[in-house]
Length: 178
Image (cartoon, one colour):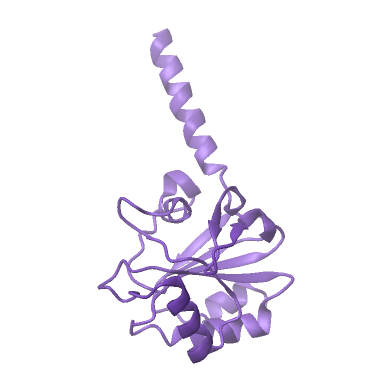
């Protein structure tokens, strides 16, 4: 009985600790190879999005940039993660992706290095974003490029939005208080 109680307490405390994770517990590299600690975003709402240069949703870069121009800065940040997980739609190197984003969409929001958003090599941040056991809110498997994740100003997971949801959708802008 004592062993069962200890096992239950261990499982419960592990689940609670996992759900206490926030965006601020993670780090990654920017598209130009610089270390980026997500705790630098404390006090900001954050939209995390997996991107691709050769996708039907690629024009969302323009909408993301428009949202960032309107709302970004002191209270809001967009973090883009290029990923090649869906039909090879992001085949480029980090340098090629950065050039594409700048030339075609004038992207000024933060772009990270190319990562994997699903599978055995999934980036730890995306494990947190997609697993209820990690984020404490919902399972939200990445369905395609340009899936969006909303994170509140305390680093807590809020929700996932489908890839086809425009970054300028009322659900996003009302969440931002616009």
